[in-house]
Structures are given as structure tokens and as C-alpha cells.
Image (cartoon, rainbow, N blue to C red):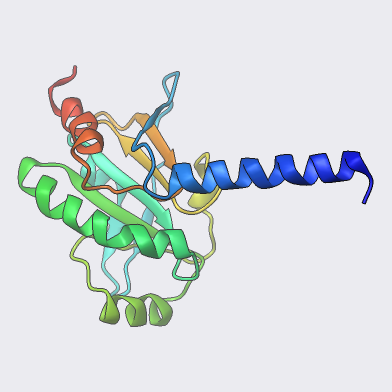
Length: 175
């Protein structure tokens, strides 16, 4: 193998390892979103047929996750999202996880094995996820009480980490 190809391969491998280690239990951060971006509205049904809307959460901070059952990092972060929900729901902070592109039967089977008690709307045709600046799954947005996109996290996070939740809690008292 010529030297430039070996060097490029080593560099690519090093970058891949760095990205994987940062997203797998590394630094728990939320990236601020600059500008005044309003969260795109949605109206979706959950597996039981109940309609879920972004508008239902205006006036409170919202952790909005996009995920799929075929996505290993999505599955890995789901228990932490449930623990976060248990911590912040009494404080008036919502957690919603929109499933991307899968049907009610698939998601119901997943939820039977890994129950959560926060809303799981279904974006069957991916029309909602396409309106958000999602670069991969999982992607999670933090939306302030006025409906603005404030933070984004691409990749798996430990959502019950106090550093993350404190950033979300701070939105309750911001103007």
C-alpha cells in the first residue's frame, strides 16, 4: 500500500475512534443553536393512535429526540431518556421521542420490551424530521418555552446527566 493511502487510513481511523469515544460516554454537552430558529410544528400519532403536537408543550422546556429502533446509539440512550423524564417531568419539563420512519407495530414491539412513559409519536413518512436540522440519529433538540430551538445534541447522550439537565432547567427561568 502506498504511504499516502496508509497515512490517510490511519488518520481516518484515528478520527473515527475519537468521534466514537466522544459520543460513547465522553463529555456530556449540548451545542447551542445560534439565531432565532423556531421549532417546526408537528402533529403526529403515537402507537396507540393518540395525537401528539409540538403546541402541546409550548410554555415549558422540551427535550425532543429523533430516533429509530434499528439505531444502536438510539437504543443505548433510551434508558437515560426515561430516567431524565422521571426527574424533570415533575418540574414541568417534557421529553418527547419522535420515531423516524417506522410503523406502530414495530415501535409497539420495541416499547413492550423497553417501556417508557414519555410520548413516542411516529413520523411515518419522515416529513417532520426533514424539517429539523438533523444530521443523523439520534439527534435531540432542546426547545425553550417559547418554541425556539436552543440546543442540539447529535449522537448518544446520558440524558440524566445533571450537566445536561441543568442546561435544560435553566430555560425555565430565562425570559
